Length: 260
Image 1 (cartoon, rainbow, N blue to C red):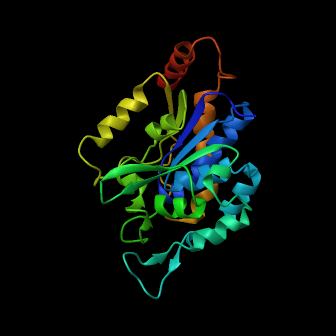
Image 2: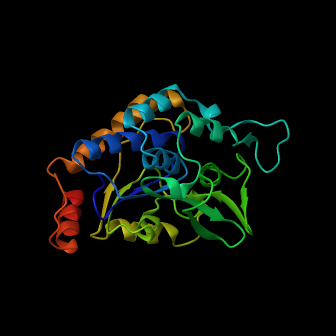
């Protein structure tokens, strides 16, 4: 059963995304089950697995046994990327997840960037595999995903922490998990705009301590999961359930705990 009004915004960060699982473990241990999930890049991968209803222990097992080959493999015909992201479809099949986003039991959005318009795109329908391939499509590493008139690359180009996307999906309160800063190539003002959203009373940001852990090595996955769990437990230590008496009271209490 989901927690009404609670949204989850999972940021990008390559292998650092394993920390998201630790956060989910801590939230579930306290009976907090997000009603909507938005994810950018690695956050989209973990968010989609969670939104599919896959048990957390199965997600952990997949993380511990996976490598970069689970997302992409070297292609013999490189074009706009040296890796073929079709391998991601095979990984999703291991989770026995649904094929289309709108069939997920939890509302989900994968954040990508349309390089033609320069705008953030929140994909909430259609092929789940294609949406995730778009969200993780780091320029130069993966090819873009073409959808209608859009040329979609990694969502981190515009919104590495998708708080606004979670709100678009219907979240009244958002737990945001920050793994990495905004991309250097992001448009001017992007980092400031997202930082403003993080400071708002309706947002609780969790920042795992990832110092010394690799953004690219799967060998650090166990430590990353633990880092996410420890950070969430620290923030949520004295928090047990959502009040239903006034959104502003609940949000204000969360913000105070985040700053403490």
